Length: 395
Ligand code: MLT
Image 1 (tube, rainbow, N blue to C red):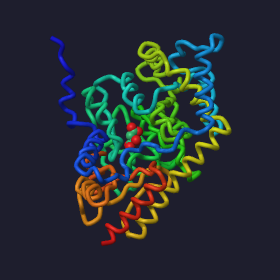
Image 2: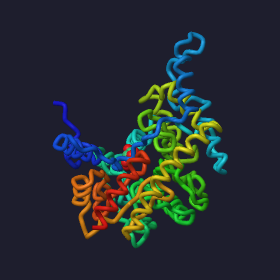
Image 3: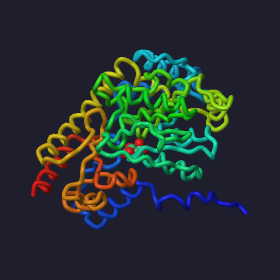
Image 4: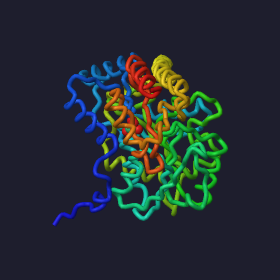
């Protein structure tokens, strides 16, 4: 008999964002005359940058031309793209070899797939509130998870301690959902802790492009010692609007080893077995993100989302409501007013003003009492949502 993976029974009924999608769908079925102002899932709304679109078109034409046609791509990424991404790091003073960069089909895929590198008995540390896939992917694999709660008193940024002893440590900075960012000293403490205990940090850098303050590291590899204890997973989803296009990259230093095994070599072995690489068309589009023109255009898009964030922050300031994030991250983590629970406040906003957020409790128990707003909507919708919140919450 084929036995199912019994750990699926340990998962919550459904994934957070799926749950919200179902709830909002039901609401619209029951209220066909209403429209929603969506600030739930962090899905971008601006089209891809012109430079990327031009490159994608060109790549399609290449595939129609016998001389330029490309078949299977190298499993770990096309050499020019790996080199371009390594250059992106070099410009920030992080020295990488091209083959320490792996092209991926996006950070969420990669955050799950990368777990193949770790023994099932590895203990995993998740600092919460956290992106829910960290927990769910490890529950599916039956790993022991240590939930490390972080609250306002520590700015949602826990420091290493006995309670954080684990084999695999997830760190997300800028953080989803709180928008909090670790500074150099704080990250250095985690790097030293990981090296001292032979742990490995999985550093989720999906939101690095939103950092405004120069003092905040964009990459864990800006920190001395990280090359012997960290893997970095990054994405073009939020940086360059690739949520529906799918492209990301992962950095695994060749110096990362445990028990005599090399993680870079293991990932090469994994990718060459489990994938045939990311499509040529997408990788060519990805190359354009890093061109001068591409960088200028994606920065303009990020600025657009930052304006949304500023608009919402002004409203919350006016209401005198406590919130975090919004500056170096595309998320605003707001305290629910009047002591409301996070799902209660979610329902209140949906029913009263048709604004959709993400309940903080979905990011871990300690997220209860908060709601997260994504700033990736259109400026018009964000403005309307802000107006509606102002009128509802100042009542
Ligand atoms: C989020 O809203 O947290 C993200 O958009 C989800 C994701 O990146 O998969």
